[in-house]
Length: 340
Image 1: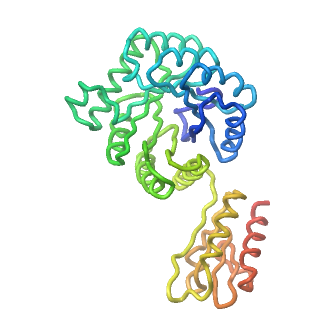
Image 2: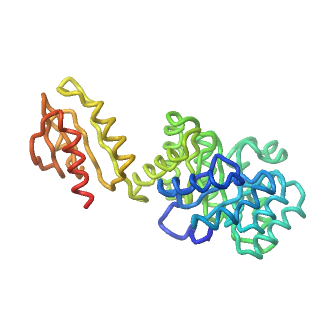
């Protein structure tokens, strides 16, 4: 349990993201947390870079109910401070907390407070001896995790989440598949440094889609160099394709020589509308009536354009003809009627 959110043991992948500002930026972070919750964030992680960041957790938690995770690197004292201040989960890379006694302090404190720890294994920060023996490979990532998990289990701590991330899609997929066969713990899945909104969408969709298709993953963060809302929208889209989330879907034909109206501006307007007014509906915009209603008959509502007009249809059934200048309004009216 991360706060009141369960990870693992259910047919669900919990969606999370990470704030861009340090935890101590209280007011800005509270506004961002509220915005990202509206976008579907169920867990939110914050970087803890100093004691002021750790001390921000009570102030943040007083005004939000979303579980908050403290992201810690190098300094075990920050993990202890975050635990004292109410963090719902700690994320550490044990490989960069070098003294065993410091890890033991974190484990003891987390155990006392009933707070889980995510052990993050990144391909780019493996222990030198492991990388020397196995290279930067799935096997190396698993061997690193085995070392850390054994240490935690020897201290009777099993409230563990594991992650295996790399910027390489094949490496990340292979590591997660091997991890699922090796460990009994929930998996946090993601592709690290996936890239910009455009490139990162492709990389994340390929990597996360392949992992989810194997039935793996308990929580997920899409990592994009973009607005965090874009991470969550893409995450929901990926999950929805596997029936693991409810999200609207826009079906658009690519167009061809039969296209007789200006379709792309309509597509852009509808896409913006659906982002601003989420609907758990499938909406179709088709280029012509030749195959529009038939090709998109699974759509809840749709338009098949023609010269100067279009057909409005629902579930493949044509309802009426609409003048081209009213296609957007007619489609929005149909969407809103289906939402009620």
